[in-house]
Length: 286
Picture (cartoon, rainbow, N blue to C red):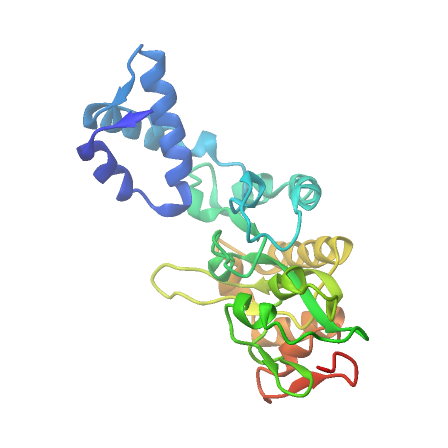
């Protein structure tokens, strides 16, 4: 649906985490009136209705994703099944009842527990500022297939993580596990070591913003669900008065979760502190 410039400017002032919801509501109400163009009056009218009935719209959690399912060429994983299972976990947690006990009936969207999935490290759904951020990951491995030296992997890597000399080497400090090099390699020298998800915890914006911290490892779907469930248990145990997960997640809590779910399947995580390359006798350039 077409929007006037004034209406679009007003929409941009809406907080990003409800902007999509507000836009959908405005267009729905505009269409119901038989109009094909959204103007500023339509935005203001919907805004009044929306704010007055916000508590009825709150469901206790927000589950978002990126544009991967719309044919994004960058997606590292197919996350549709994970999203369905996450929805079930969040519904079963009955966060709405919990929040009503803590906050009362005057709930706002900022009270909701936020989970997002990004299908690749580009992280379009902003996992770094969510309670739980999930990022698709494919860790490359050097196989026993000889390298032709074509440098297709070097050209396609957005992080300059691959070095070709006498052998193929991957800089594990730079590698973000997007998997592009695997798809580009014509000889099979680069293969898939592990595929799954990176998980970040405790991000938020607001008066005291905080970036989410990453758990060590790349996790499969079942492990991601277990992590989310553990976070929900911790959140319901410690949050009072509508405090965000980031506000109650202490360093000790994070360390305990890290130890509980720690996986040594991503060299890049350890290499954040120590720069190192991983190579193989295989992948040698003839």
